[in-house]
Length: 282
Ligand SMILES: O=C(O)C(=O)C[C@@H](O)[C@H](O)COP(=O)(O)O
Image (tube, rainbow, N blue to C red):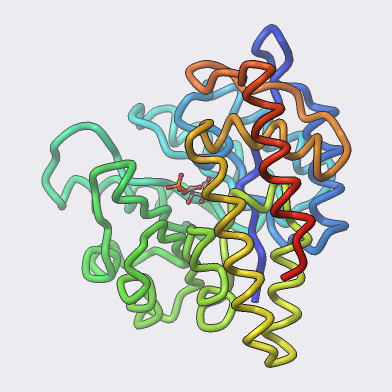
């Protein structure tokens, strides 16, 4: 029943990563019951980070914890392998990658991509499957063909699709907030971007499930959904920077374009809407 948070990347006004803010954020998440930090994921704008920024994020998080999954995906294979080799010298749980996105490629190219990563990595290799963002579905059959995947984060509204990875006997997570109750109940855990700003709600959800109090768990899941849904029109990732400050009480810097900062009035409107839902009893 693990709670994994794909950590956001704190930037300063110049668009540089602020390492101290990373560490403060990780320390708080761990205090609030988060088990593992997923570095350079979608919420962390991994695809928009340079190789050096990806390495810096890993080092900042490792200054606090080794409960880390390090996302290394890139369309530049040389960069992927440099990041894998960098991780080989570190103590962490696993490296992960989304499949090569954007380009139309045959499935055997995806198999070759992951086999290259597995060959280079001293750590277990996890698949980050996110068909909605990458245009590629590395389903259980393709994962079987790759034959070296030791875990999967499936960001997929089709929960039946996610469950099937358990046929491989690997660590299996779903990456959607609105499936957290199912992921915590049936899979190895949940990966939740919203855990950046409301980690305590996911910890509480896990406690309700452990206690078998599914009515309370369902009510809390619906509250999580309402809050998460509120952020969509503002930009989910950009919204998180303002909600961490409001709900967790510390500054995690600003988003970096093309994840633009919110206009002041919009940020205020968002925070007021979320605070109203947050204060409602389940
Ligand atoms: O940020 C990551 O690496 C995650 O796993 C969360 C990811 O699944 C993402 O937040 C999915 O949510 P949306 O598709 O943006 O609603």
